[in-house]
Length: 102
Image (cartoon, rainbow, N blue to C red; front, top):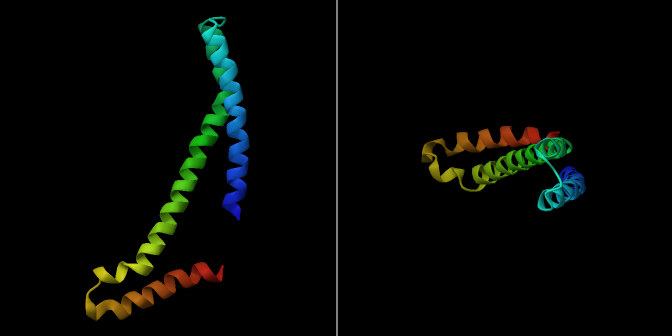
């Protein structure tokens, strides 16, 4: 549920960023802006660009953790020596039991 809220906020801020960029693009297309005005026009976009980068980073890390968990539970046993599979199963129980208790 937490990720849905982040995506909603991200979408809203992305629309604001697109609007700001469209204002900049129109000014650049009509050549109404000189170099200083163009630089100043990009300043309001910096928080949105930073937010975009951080959100993509957060979603990527979150997705990689989910992928790692799925792989360990479903396919990790293939790479474990037959005599150590009981130890591997106990390791997974301890590791993912803590996540489920929280």
